[in-house]
Image (cartoon, rainbow, N blue to C red; front, side):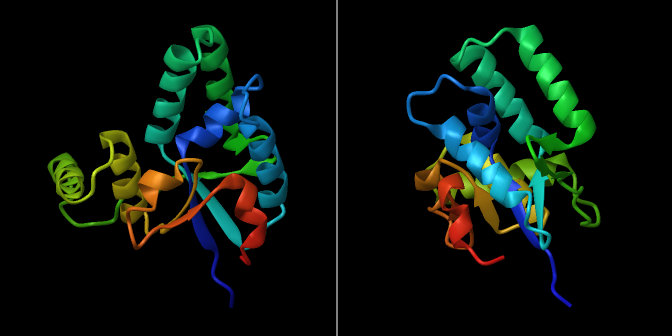
Length: 163
């Protein structure tokens, strides 16, 4: 029996999907990734509420999208659990006895003391660990590669991996 590979989608994937006027071709790279990834039957893709929250912030504040446009688009994504052609699942809640928000924030603090990356990316790492996920699709290779136990894949390189 082949087990499903679990892969986490970073917030930048959502930003690039909606930002059609980018100068670095990320929108095109994400669309190609979504087409290829949607055909992988042995891979499960996961998204956290944090990834969507971060993407919404970037689109509204950083890319100056209209709030209503972002709200409507993300509401649909949340209902159908689909980005383009790719179906995803929500991150499962941790199944750790007595694990609470204090534990979650302590995990973030520990990581911040050991690896120099931002709080947002640290939250992604902790959520991945809690969900038993060790692979991320992201454009932010520099920060996530600082974690030895994480496989970091750029969307345009996904096709090279045998899942």
